[in-house]
Image (tube, rainbow, N blue to C red; front, side, top):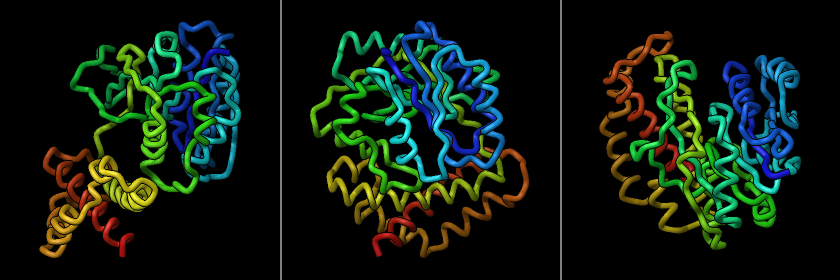
Length: 297
């Protein structure tokens, strides 16, 4: 088998069926690739969505169900079941185009030992997709980003997969990417190995979740820095004395409280205005740096 599409899911029943259908509807011959899905303890209708997807699957489809253990451990569970010579990672909010697998394989034919990064276009809706043409406006400098990336399965297993101490949101793919970078694994980019990444405009009710996610990312940033005390990590995480001091002063002068007032009430489903969205993102940023300080203390 040439390729495995591996994805993990957690409480994304609303999107998962569409994502799996896109995985099944590839131009790559069905016997040459498989889909391996890990359900990381979902509590919504995900089991029913998976059961229906089994009936529609046009390629080998393996499902692993486990108690919620975090993305790193779930990824490793999927890796253990993979049979493809190349493994392609996506997320459960990512829609691959029909030529997605074929384009990853074309790049691997040209660069057999490489990591292949595919193009990603953000979209607010799977029903109204943008033109499927990647441009520099969608550029990401990530070396290894599991929204759309592939590599030889043997290389991944040689480097022991994902570090399972990352139990919360953030940085587990960056950490693996750093180890692969230090090992000298080459990296190529194919903009035609394209996915659409579901990024709806946040609503008022989403703000508390944005803040919780930012705090979790602050805690995992400390883990990443402890494993890799390198300038690339400092640049990526902002975990350095000057930035922490600037945000500490901002908190002492009451910036978070002013941002909370700018966001307004967060109980409703109303869409955030541009001003409220900027304030919500700034509030999450302050929560991130507050968590960095707290974790270091």
